[in-house]
Image (tube, helix red, strand yellow):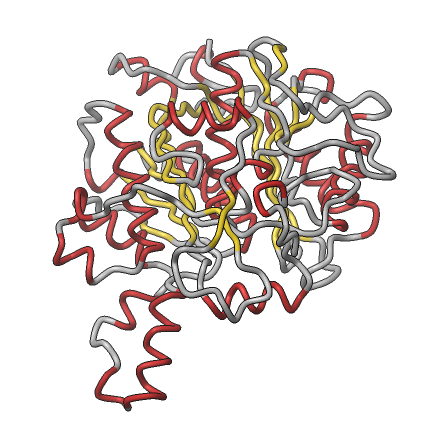
Length: 417
């Protein structure tokens, strides 16, 4: 392998040749990007179930989505919506990548989810307690298991390499991509489909997050409830969705004449080891994770053009992430944005979709605004892009994801060339 195809540590450079999304902002790349650039809200009254008894009645849902077009009606009925979203996003990414001409033994799937088939779990629990054991679906276990999406993707494609599920809560989509990068770098796979999917808009999930105080309760204006880094933020807006990458070595991608969206140049992951839901004080763990990703990329903090923040719109996360960014970048950090102002929080789907947004930002040289930011929060000394997109050029992007359990994951994405 020539030096042109290896990084500063002699490892294969990893190209992104396919991207696919199923999100509240859109189910194709153009619609998704247009919504983010416009800073449009996707929050509205919950349609997935009757929300009358809930204290929080709004979410960011995926509209105009037909899994049967990909799976057929029979198989679609036997899969949870979390797999519908993940499988279809992965198939779109694969189509976007073009003809791969792969050895199935050398192809891998890294499909993450925070929780798995929650709607199946809740529906079958209700059936059991109301009507008895005979009403539990025989497909209950394969529908709800977190690894279902990875399994279904591999079976449809006939890929016999590793098919793994990563469940690190809100960091899971970013972890899946990062671990996919590692498979390419160490020669374990030639092609990896990597991403995350989540369908958490269920009665018990909404009630549970609301009881924790994690969700925004802005009932009078749900369309403005997700407001990362704003002084009036009061919690995140839960969302469903999925995002997937096709990863392969830069050498392989160029040899087959693939369109290359960019490269994943750096990956960091660590643990706060502090609290099951709260970030470590001062963002210590997040800062170490960001620095690890930058070091892994061979770049320096001054090379980073903007930060795609985890930016959940919760009091603790936004303040902690701000402190972490300052620890890494000093007193003049690069521009920051959070896509969750438009998308809501897709849990495992979030990091993957935000990594896609990061590569689209590199492609167009434009940072999308953080929707609904009006007054920067106390103690948040960041240059948060808001109001309108900002043109900065095709510069490397650092993309953060942090999850309950103290899981931190960061990617550095760069233009290819």
